[in-house]
Amino acid sequence: MSDSASTVLSERGFRDALGFFATGVAIITAQVGDEKLGATVSSFNSVSLNPPLVLFSLTRTSFGIDKWKAASAFAISILDEEQISISNRFARAGGNKWSGLDVRHAGNGAPLPPGAIVHFEGRPYAVYDGGDHEIFVCEVTGYHIHHLKRQPLVFYSGKYRHLDRHDADQGPPLDNSWLHGW
Image (cartoon, rainbow, N blue to C red; front, side, top):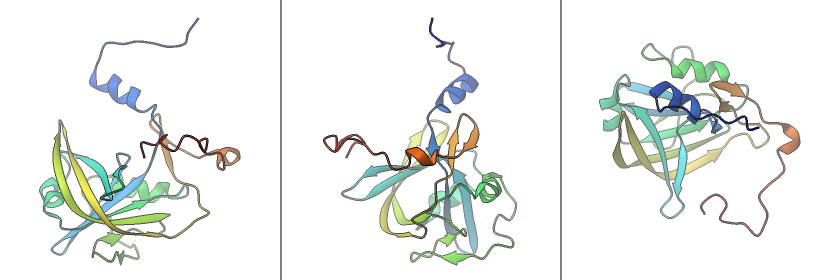
């Protein structure tokens, strides 16, 4: 007997089903005028190596979506497993997410939250209609690896998770270089 289930498509059910795809957690940042923007996302992904492109999406009802679309530079900071509190801080709508933080800036001027494993710097490449989201594609202009030995924060089935350290060194077979679409 299988433990699988099939259901009628509903928004909540679809969201729950998507939650079975484990993702990393990132904070997207930008600065428009004097205002610093920041949002936690699990929708960050690579798109292309040449040119170097990545994407993230934000809901159309995001606070300040027009400011996000006006940004000329972005930073994408990948969080480590100890950064749940900063992930939650930037996941909330409104408020001053930057209050009390030691704010540094990427080479492109985008603000950086503290402690990320790596951050990518980029500029807008394209924005696409993604239904109830806007899909932002960015051209990566640089990146900086801050912490080689930290484990990433993972989001799975609506909860933060940690990687099993015993599996951390297992990679795909050497003869399958296209496993990740590259």
